[in-house]
Image (tube, rainbow, N blue to C red; front, side):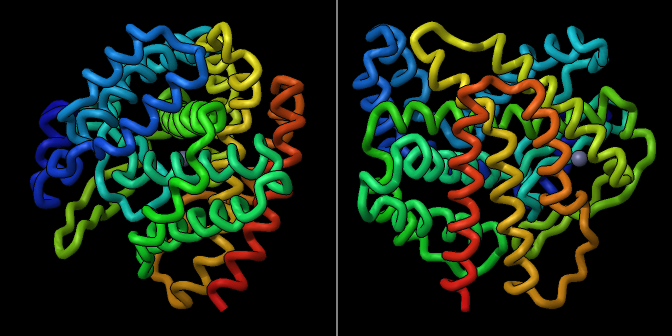
Length: 343
Ligand SMILES: [Zn+2]
């Protein structure tokens, strides 16, 4: 059974591809294209094309389009780092109940990356909040910091499987996503987060970690499907982070565009945002679900941040290092906000 057949079978076991049943929201799309238009960084023709290309698509199609574009460039970056990914992995969004992704092999040995269905949407929310609080300077936009933290908290609750208020999320989100340059920056950051997550999983394939298999269960509502991933040794995770961050930085440099140079160089903070959010999530997870049967699948986010931070200090663009100071401070405050809100 090849990768595509295997993923179709898993999807069916889980009740069909959830993302195919959900249309890509037209209002989000309109807002983001109008933001891009107002930045003045894009040709009208390219924007029209973007409008048309996403019209009538499902979430699944849009996520697949994004990751396919990314995967090819990323595989080239690995080759330049002298750690080849033998074949471009097949990437599929599935419900994993994990704010993360998985590297596995199809029965015929083809490499696969599974990303959680809610992962990209959550990255968009995180990136929008960071753009609001860090790139804008929260003091000059009274009230927006509160809105940003509310959005982050709702995203966190959604991932923890807790009650969250979708209405509140929908109402609050536009408060922080109306400035065109910040919306543009947030889009780049969210995509950067996804690129790093894929780079981490590709690293497991490149480093041969998928040869020690482990059975895990995927779940969606009352359905369940077992699949086989690799044995998540903590040292393997640090190695995948280290190689993944190098590949991500190579990708960032390769795709840097004229006109967005300043924003994109700050975009190198994306992998650290993901881990900062994860660290708050882990701190609160114990509080939200005091008795957890799940074994930890990755080392603690704070330990991962120490490894990533070291490489980032050495290799990242100076603009990104300045922006990261603001990110660290923002997540410290958000941690306090979330703890208070859940008390
Ligand atoms: Zn991993």
